[in-house]
Length: 203
Image 1 (cartoon, rainbow, N blue to C red):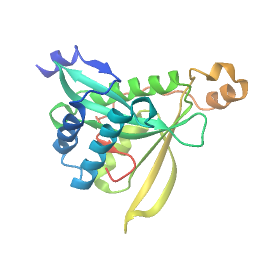
Image 2 (cartoon, rainbow, N blue to C red):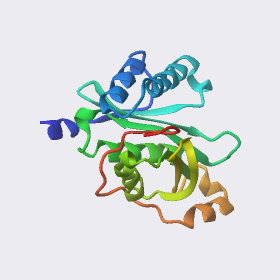
Image 3 (tube, helix red, strand yellow):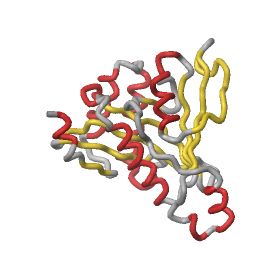
C-alpha cells in the first residue's frame, strides 16, 4: 500500500504553520535523536517560518496524501559563494526503506544546483549506529573529506562528506567555477537505504 502511495509523493519548499509540529513528529519517530536535537530541528523550522526569505535555512518537504513524511533543511554556508550545508535529512520511521530519502536528497540537490550551488557538505557522527547513514551518503555520490576526532564526545568524531554538483544555476556564467565543478563526476543515488540524519550533530 505504501509503495502505491509513494507514487503520488509531492515535494514542496514553502513552509506552513503546521510544519514545525510535523517535523517534531518525524524526527522523534526515528528514535535517533535526543530531546535537545529534536528541539533544534523544530526551532530551525520555526525560524524559517517567522523570518521568511530573511532566514538562512531552506527546506524541502515530501508529502503523501497530505501527510508530511520527510524533509531536508539546507542553506548556503556564510562567507562562501557556491557551498551549501545539508543540515538535516529525516524520513519518518513508517516510510524508511522505501526510497524516500534517496528521492528527497535528489530533489534537494537539484534545488541547490538551481540556486547556483556547486558543493554540498554533510556532517555526521562516527558512531557505529550511523554506519548505514554514512553508507547512504557514499552511495549517493558523497566523498569523505574530513574527520574531527572526539568532536561530539570521546570516541564520537565528526565526519564531513562533500558532493560536487555537476552544474548550478549560476555556474554556467562563471568559467573557472564550471571547471571546478566538473572535476568530480556527478553521482546518482542508487541502492541506498533511506537516511535520517541531523547535520550538524550526531545522527
